[in-house]
Image (cartoon, rainbow, N blue to C red):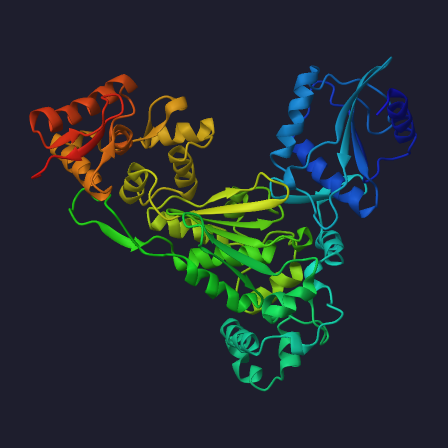
Length: 544
């Protein structure tokens, strides 16, 4: 924006008799409270939306009664003003921040003009989880009427609520409707006797699957016959399961999704997985690779929150040790941590009509605890937490881990059941080599859960208890389970997590070399069967 345009905006604003909901003056001669800036950002963004304005203005360096320029030294360095953009984004809905921060050097002094964007249609803007608004010149909590007015902007654009012009009740699957009735009774036990007296039209209207007896996109997605999914075009009513380690392993599933979810889950090879993290016993724990509730909740969340306008299917990728569920559309909350901390329904849903129908049919819950429960179940299994990739604007990707990544992580969870979920999330990031905040690292160090430099942070373990005989058995078991051979890399990857992170890397590699040398040269139990010592392949000596 040019200096001439800014001067015009400033001149028109200062000419007003009083401040408005979308113009606020502050002297801020030397500084100004960050939290107050954040609250004004939320309030003025929401008010700009409600007044149909593209933006609002918070102006420093102007007295708020007579609107005289007094000058401001707030963040006099440009780099400090630019930092404020991220600082605000970190604490607002959908990481919203200033459109721009302008500086005008007037003869009376410096003026700082913060251009605040109007809240997106259908999404009221919060600062640190709270919505703010304006009552004339006062900063207040955004009242429920205004919140609903903004949220209702999205309802008019809710794809899942749209009527399918050519669809009739003949396009719905009879078995799916029966299943829907069963699920509705479970969700609403007080209405069991009433449900049996309702015909299908009445039932589906009351379950909010249809609208005044008309077939919606939601009705086709959840209850439509397989061939009826074509009526959703250009949207795609399809879930694809793909087995990544077997080219022939794939299958496509169509509507009705209320039945399809079970068919998709039946494809997944959820076999038993054995692991040993308890030092007090020689017997391993045995569990399924994946918890059924975790898989179901993740898939049904993808159905509920997918952006069907992208003409994209939902994909379930199955690997040897993990599942990845992908759906089109960005992750609506600002972060997964926000969902877990606030543990409440999110303020905006992409497919509100679909979400309400799935709640009524006992497929999902809107109380906001689904993701937190997923994390809790994985934590109770001593498994890695799910990984949410929400960096893309066009898709969301959730990884469910079906095996341990680092046994020391699991040992610490078992040893410390009192750990907060925040601490477990931080520890999980360490094992996945993901960025961890300095505050979290400090906290984990205080709890003696990690060791080593920040660049090579490792989870602490019971290193002193592992003997040569333990390592010997570990290596022999590895060779046996890997069809009779193991490379040096295999053995290093096996033993490295058991060594103290405080030891230099060269010392740890030397220790592994000594263990292998003792097994091969002194005891003669294993031998190198490759043609080079640089890339050895170890096998058991005949008779062992």
